[in-house]
Length: 282
Image 1 (cartoon, rainbow, N blue to C red):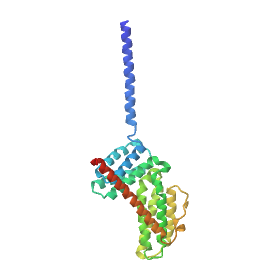
Image 2: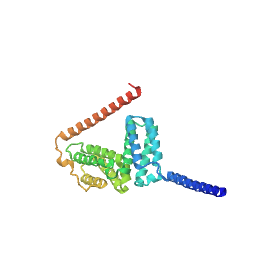
Image 3: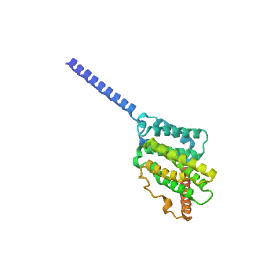
Image 4: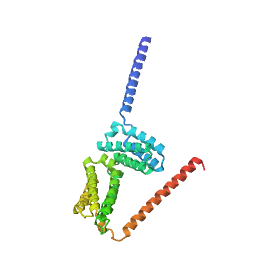
C-alpha cells in the first residue's frame, strides 16, 4: 500500500514538473517573441521626447533617444509600416544623436524630435495620422508660390523661391511619416517635384525671365500633393482664387502667427513656473 501511495506521489510530482516546465518554456518563448514595444507605446515615447526637446532638456532627450533606438530595433515592430520609412526613421535618429553630441541648436533638436514624433504616430494613426494634417499647410504653400510667381514686381522669382524652400522644409517634416504609410514612389515624387521647381526658380532669379514651364510645374506639384495625401486631384480650390488681392491676407497671416507664438510662449512660461515651484517647494 505504501509502495502504491509512493508511486502516486512520484507520478504526480512528474506531472507537476512537466506542466511547470511547459508553462515556463511557453512563458519564456512568448517573452522572446513579444515585441519590445507596440506602435502606440513607441508613439507615446516619441511624444515624450518631443516635449523634452521643447523644454530644452538635452540630457533627458539624449537618454530618450537611446531608449527609442532600442525599442525601434525590434524586428516585429519593424514589420509594421514601409521599409523605406524605417530607413528614414534611422536617419532621423542618427541626426538627432549627432546634434545632441555636437551642440546642435535647440531649434534643430526640436525639429528632428518633431519629425520622429510624426513618424511613430504614423505607425498606428492610420488615416488619422498627424502628418496628414499638413495637407492644408502644403496647399497654402502652393497658393503662395503661385501668387509670388505671378506678382508684378521685380523680386517675383526671389519671392517664389523663398516659398518653395519653405515648402521643402514642410516636406522634410513629414517625409519619414509619409514613407512609413505610403508607397515610396508617391513620397519621392513630391521630393523630386520640389527639387525641380526650386532649380527652375533659381534659374529665373538669375536671368529675371518668366518661364512658362514654371507655371506648369506649379500645377504638376499641386497634383502630386493631392495624390500623396490621397485627395482627389484639384479637390481643394486654389486659395489664390478667393483670397482678396489686398493687404488683408498677409496681415491676417501675420496676426495669426503672432497669436500662435504668444500662446506657445505663455504655455512655456506656465510650464516653467510649475516646474520651478514643484522643485523648490515654494
